[in-house]
Length: 338
Image (cartoon, rainbow, N blue to C red; front, side, top):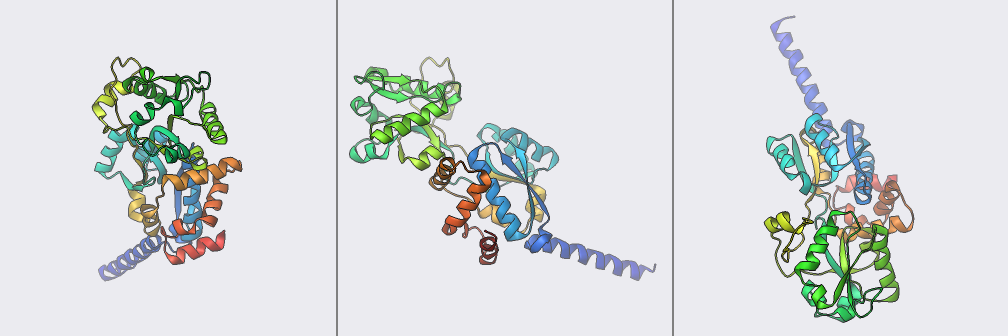
């Protein structure tokens, strides 16, 4: 083969490779290729993975595949093996140090904040209580009114409903109870026993339009079904005090502290960021608020729906939200597939 011919063959090969890369990057039809998506084992992450699968498959022509996952195993596999390609809802606070290092090295990338409000926890009251008592804005305000939050077994005392037994939040809620001197203000800390017990206490209060005060977090199906208002701690989050005392069972003198907001990101591999093109652009634009997530989770719980059911329900009933994530051409393809 002459030198000129070698050069021509090389030029054609490069052009072919470049064209294939462009086809992938443009997200046209089946040329998007295979995309693996971590399907985490909690409800909000499961439905988001299903939404991504549907949009990537029907809108971009990807061969989108869900793979079982959880925070630590999925992110570790992404760092070490480059698979799966996408973790749609990664709660990163517990793995921030190694994950930040991987991002700095360029192995992984934060595509977007999948929960734009972040993961939120703290003490909440029903909206009807907040509306009827506009002066209650903070934890201290609520603790000044034990009469509004009667304990189930002793109506002369107010109640603060604790996090489920065995969960980490049971410790920080107990320490918050001590830090705010709730017992001296006429309150008792109620052991809810389980997540079902905690949820049931909120549902019961709502049905009877009674006062309720206690720990909860968002996004969840309960907060999607029952409107609750998070109380301000009245102080800023002090990470040093939180880590050294507020989350420790043997913390002798806990201080008043705001709960940290959990950073929740969509994380992707470097290969997918470089080769995903429009599919990556979609993921970098796709986020939603805790209220929208909560309403969807409530519908799923009420209808015993799977993540796939929830994804279809969301896409059919929330065009105003998801069509902002994609082009009109992609939106038309997704709508046609529903």
